[in-house]
Each structure stands twice: as structure tokens, then as C-alpha cells.
Length: 275
Image (cartoon, rainbow, N blue to C red):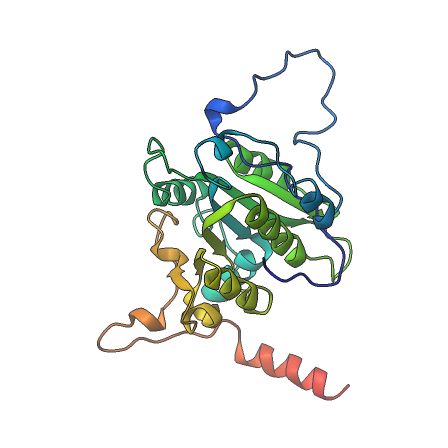
């Protein structure tokens, strides 16, 4: 089990992920708006674990498995968005943002043949901070859900309102309810993930970190974690990003242009120094 910080607890999607074929039929339309789009969630990690301590007998117990296998994808939306801006030195556009349909296909393909008896369940979750004025984020969230991703959205009203603990909590819940076979984490945040992910590897989980190589030193240098540059995921971007990767330099070398004006930097540096 991964470690937990002594701070607030996150809510997480209730229960194990379901195969599409096992999903309940869609309720009849009554003209009354639904009050929520997901199943009820627990108020804390401890409450979620308490409901899982004595599971009722089910298919997993019948065929001899103690718990169902699961491949889990965690997407740290604030970190990926911020590091993408850093890597390309500009505000991301539609052409430079990751394609979640291609990422979903890559992830599910890595889970293997779903018809095999030992095929794992698959679950992909995007964790996002939502500003007071969400703008077009509602359409983005609905598009993600249409691609098969669960979305955990937390209001961003204060600078320290982040989703770091939410992601760790959900991983812990799934590691308890399932045999976590493969964990794919899209994040360059070594401060939050390095120690918990390496602990999971020692406990038998195959952990893959997917991020930009420029900002994922914690995963690249780890002897336990597998690292994949996000641009190496097939189809993840419509066109190559405007970046020069140090792990893929041409034989004759390459120039890495500055991401901001030298004068702008010196002006801000001087202002901070003279305060």
C-alpha cells in the first residue's frame, strides 16, 4: 500500500471499474435532470477502504483469484499542461495538445487481449483543477468521458488547491480493491510520485511514467520505474512538437532557443532583487 500524507482526503469513483458489457442499462429518460453523473463516492480514503475489508464472494473468488487484475492510468492534467508549455515555450494550441483518443488506444492495447481468462480490467482517470470560470473546460471534460476516461475535477479557488493527494488516494484505493498489475502515470511531478511509485514496484506492480523527458528526471534516473516520453506514444500529437530532446539529438547537435526574452528575464530578476 502506498503511503498517505496527513492532509485532506479525496473522493474516488466508487467500486471496481466495470467492463462495458457488464454496465447497467441506461435509465429511461424522464425529462428530469440527473443530480449527478457518477456513482456515489466515499468522503475519504479510509471510508472507501472500510467498505472493501470484507468483500462478498464473487466471480474473482470462484475462479481462485483473491482480487481482479487492473491496469490503471492516472493523468495529472495540471502538470502535463504546465510542462507542455515549458517544453514548447508557448501556450499550447489544439495542434500541440495530446490526443486522448490515441492515448486511450495505446493504453488499452498494452493491457493485452481482453478475451483471455486473465485479462485485466482497465481504468483511465484524468485529474483536473477547475477555475471559477471554467469556460470551455466543460466540453473538454465531456469529451474525455466520451473517450472512456473518468474525470476527477476539483475547484481551483486557492493557490494551494491541488490534486496531488487525490491521485495518490485513488491509486491506494485501487491497489486495495484490485491486483494492480500495471500503473501508467502521466506526470512529471517527482515530488509527489517518486517514492509512492517505487514502493508499488517493490510490491509487484509494473509502473510506467509517461511525461516529457525534459522534466521527468525522477523517472529517468530511477532503477525501478519505466519511463516513456509522451511524444513516443503513437499518435499522441497531431504533429511533432517544437522541441529538441536531449535524448534524441542529431549527430551534429542542435540549438535550443530561449523560451523567453533575455531582457524580460533580467527585468523580472532585477525587480525581485530590489524588493
